[in-house]
Image (tube, rainbow, N blue to C red; front, side, top):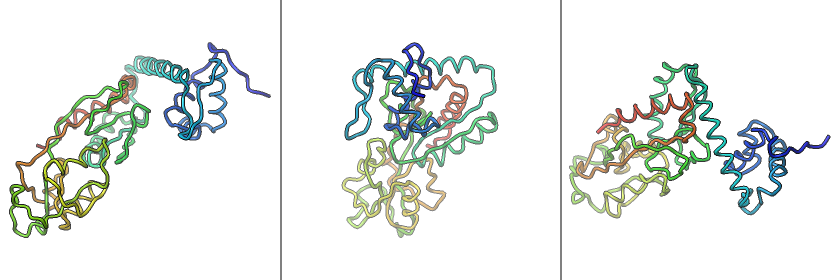
Length: 300
């Protein structure tokens, strides 16, 4: 029995969502995984949408599936439908039990040292809410639904996001007593050509802290690089070199000494959420807890 193709007004949300997830994930296989169906089902649903619109919505190039101009226009309008659907879900859920899964993405340090501590508050207040915390140095595209809430040291530019600044995070330089060996480093003039520094492996635009060291120290001699803030802290504890860390790392508690206190950097911290997702009760609940915690718990 062949596929029954539908007219445009007969299309259901399953067909339209297949297009959304294919565009967001970049492939049929990834879309199928996100939708919980097999790849042939996604392909069939996309074929139904193309038949209903009377034109090709995707083309293939070296990057994979790419929207045609008409496909882009259709995608934009289906996104608007999705926004309206989420708003309706939020309205209909008012007064009901708050439940669901919320994915929060952030940098490793913020996630592990701050956001993870919010989980208990959320669990105590909303036991039916499950939090997934994704901590990574890789870019997470909230606009493509890779996370529901995103905490970052930069302000995303996607117009579909609602972003607010929740705190100003101080960063300082630290070294171990073993590294300092009794030296007092109160200014760059106290450094020598032999002083070593710890930094990040790469310099992605979404992780500006990889460049902050250079804003404090001109031409630092880097001896150790890592993608992990915790790896950098451990290296500093062992006396490898001088490291730049945020105040919430509580570096003094692990034996690191703050140096050059007047060389502090203050970096804004942002929380972002999809405009339409903010209306869903479980998203709203986590968003409010995260914002409140970050606003009150960032040390000076």
